[in-house]
Length: 164
Image (cartoon, rainbow, N blue to C red):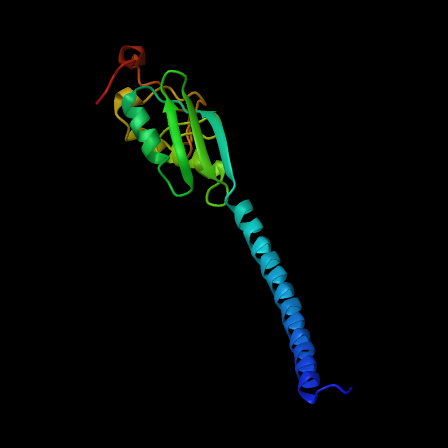
């Protein structure tokens, strides 16, 4: 009894089709794996670039008006959260390290007229502050000044709850 030519052709066609499907699947799986690896490779550096950092540091201000100015100065690109406590004089800042540096944050404050525990206040900006917001500079001098900052003789303890 011989095999029917139609059966042989169907069997051959099925084997060829199966081989082609397996080949394509293997290539597709390899492409899928390569695509996944590429996505992971691009995602990891993006995550590293968006690293968030929290810092706490002293800013030498006096009143609620200082608080407003300080927090306004910290409303900058890359800063996610900023709050200054006028009683403790401590600022808490959360920022993206890929957008702004800690030194740049301190400079924002200095440019607003306030000293931090790292950076001296800009004298021109300090002189533009209201008298109640000026205090003897705790670092004893100013950025951009040749001589030491002087006490304005104003008693800031009277302005503990001062608001403008």
